[in-house]
Length: 111
Length: 115
Image (cartoon, rainbow over all chains, first blue to last red; front, side, top):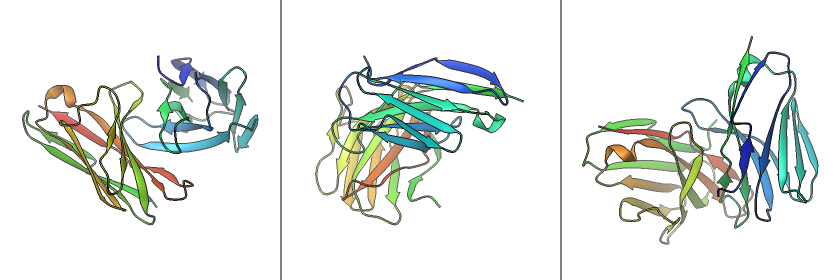
């Protein structure tokens, strides 16, 4: 099956709440990245975490990486309506830039 | 501003015609470019890896004769969908990396609709 599987498929929350989504992968990785995609648009890079890192923060985003479980989580705190988008994890095992994307989590934040 | 420009943003064509999509790196030399395809409500699937001056490497299941990739310069890669059919309708997106392997940028994508 596909590298970088994610859950949940969809998430509906209210503004101010936190959103958590998970990603699992099968093979060893160099890096894991999280991207956001608004409907019908390109990708926005959110954060990159290296295989030797366990946690990383960027603004309202918090990413964890557990290489022993081959999993990662993305937490968006104090969500806003503008956070409504699909979120994808992506791993590169073969070479830099050659990404395997997860199935994605569609997040809807209602005002 | 965008450092990888993808053109066109959307294209509608008749079945049987060919469509060319361009991916340009604007302020760095893109030694490697990647092409992905995304069907509605699905994830991105890697189609091929394109290295400047050499033939593209296609992922399993991707027809190289149907999806022609050219990477003739360090700033431009093109994907040509030949004899397009409705099942080729999809969102195509490119990404580019530099020689040092430090930069990775995505284009804004091309929505292809084949009638």
